[in-house]
Length: 208
Length: 208
DNA sequence: GTCTATAAATAGATAGAC
DNA sequence: GTCTATCTATTTATAGAC
Image (cartoon, rainbow over all chains, first blue to last red):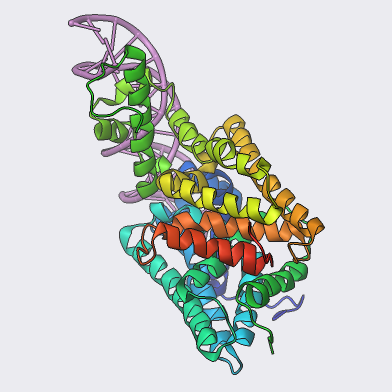
């Protein structure tokens, strides 16, 4: 997208950054399959074609790799998705946009998301705190837009917090089954979930 | 409930069975907090007041303890909850009963459920296969009752499988937040979710 | 059924050459 | 930036006494 096939030589910094991302991506895949604590540094190193000790040039500890994976599924969606809630439009329309953005992000970061949900207990307390903070903030923003829709009369649910839990759990569960159930396309699920969540569950009649 | 305060002496077998359950319960708590692979046998032993080696009198391997935890949140709900789907009544009424049974079971087995969702990668392939089978069977039964309600005209959703994923993810997400959000009682959530799921999302007008 | 003692394997991390 | 070599700690599991 940003760079075509052209052989633009990469700077040393750019190559190092790419290797870092390569390590994070490969680790996420392996952690998702076998569990973070069951995976050794040597196994991660094999996956990117270097020796175990060389990983410590890129990350000071194994846990820092896990932390990097977790950031891609907490800080990243907060930064990329939540702005749609600040765009102009009704609560129903803005929440529908968030549902779409959220599912598309989960689709792009599917393995990372599984790791982020399963391996929180292996983070250091400080990192755990930060990751939990991102997640709580995201859920609060969902609850707030549900509450706004209740005040405007678009949503007919009785409890904003309970509905927000329902919405978040439905959305996040997506990464657990979409990869195996290829009966529906991504866009089928996206529009199907906008309907189930915003129109049916919350009761919005108009999504514009 | 079954035995009052009376000092009925327990048989040797009964005491051994209770110690097994004690180990499983204590392990579930520790695994949920710190992650299965980060917990040593010595730590489990400490929690029940014995030495690490003594655990091997009750379980042949650490993984067997995890397997026992996982069974309480897959085989047990299949055996205890799914019969309500075979009781007389409409699909909407039967699904409403399953929602209630499911949330009450999750409330009773909350820590075990978190472990069962996070630590599947640490099971042996054979045990993993069995646990996955129980979960798939449960989800299939949910899908089937949704499909039955679509055929009877009670449910107005367009896709039974997608709706079933939504229902299961909403329900199972409960164990992730209920312990921290004590604003609502269990019965508030149970009836709130029956409404959100069966009436609102699926469109049933009558739950009798 | 629980203990002490220990075997055997593997892990994360570091030192220092190239 | 990656390598070889290795340290140190820890783990699961077993042997055999009580």
